[in-house]
Image (tube, rainbow, N blue to C red):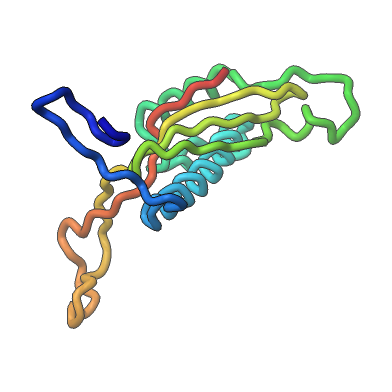
Amino acid sequence: MGAGAVGSGTVSAVFPRPRPGAGPSRKTLAAAVEARRFTVATSRLLFEVFDRRRGIAHLGDSVSPSIADQVAALVRHDAFRVAETTGPPGGPSARGTVLQRVHVQLCDTSAAEVFGSYLSGGRVRAFAGRVERKPCRVRGSDPRPGGAGARTGLGRVEYRWQLVALEFC
């Protein structure tokens, strides 16, 4: 059997070969860019919450309820608090937790595995997680022409990225 054929004797399925030089579709590229942009913004926001520069309410719907509970517990127990050091002012420990790198591996156009590194107390640490597009009801004006800005009952549904899993190493 040739490349791209699967099966034995009587049953076979032939899968089309990708064209040489064919890259990912525009939809896939757009999803990858959106997922990375969301992950960077949400990661920065998370580290600001850990450093108590922002409150947990700032996370809003960008994280799932279980992640919000996890973050609240970490903040409550000062899990990211760096012990005072005798280093020079303005050194790594004086800046708090700083995001360094973020990598995104798209699973499909609505889910991605994310991982990266951050600097905390002069040490480089790692994190990993998963972001997914979740449906979200949006209230607003009637988008139809002639709607005259009337409020709709339930609104429309948009898909927005949300952090649904998070681990620190």
